[in-house]
Length: 384
Image (cartoon, rainbow, N blue to C red; front, side):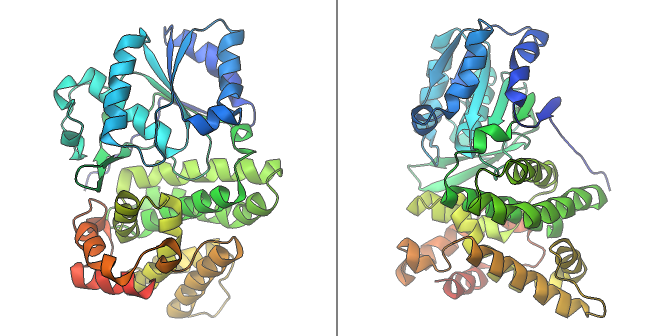
């Protein structure tokens, strides 16, 4: 079997890492930045921490901030037009998954205009040319969009999330600067952190997992277990913030290359149809679906239990697996994640529609245990 691993050309880590921007822009022979970010990051001064580095170095830029939390086809089309008019020669993405995913789509379409309808990018798109150079600076510790070959765009007309997979979209440079995350609100820190844990656990047990990806995912689980609760409850803790920033990147290195599972398959329709934040949807679903998947991944669940410090000598595989599920559930409760879909306004009447979308999601086939619409419907009912 042949396994592939695609990563950034270069990545930087650590508080203040954004200061390398000028030297990297110069090294790549680039001149003007098209800044993809959102209005909240501008309002609260997070984007300004990056833009001031450009200003001090005399690097011109133009800001595009028309990006929704669940970015849409319309967002992308507007961004492609704005990029063409800007005179920029690279994209600087500042934000969470929404900004970075939008930047990826803009960069891909700009260099592959035959995909300008956006919807044709769903799944594995056969693009011929690499994206416009993207430099990504994440402001949340969750999505790992800065290191993945995936991006997610909402097709608002059909109310579905399109998962696009394309090695040509990976950012040339990732700059993981935890200082950009220090002001992240408690709820968002919790949700994005559980998103990262979902990536690590699903990436560990997905059908495409192998030794190299397992190594990264186990380390990510260990670090998230160590740092997430502190980052939520003590947001000024620099060690915890940096630990989560690195952990989510490590998880992304692996899942980007091996795939995910039905947690994401079921979370995507919740975001597309009801605009529920992706991290919240994943976190709410994760323990229940872990329990469902347990028979298909017992050995991996033992590794999860060890990484979360809940494994005890003499435990059977089944006992260790139950301890792993319990640890994830308890972490979710401690950091304030909603536990039921009804808390998010979902009713039983919505479940059939959600299940229909989830069974067709591109992430669902990677699940270690086979599912169909009826099984997915029962899983939604368990968390209703």
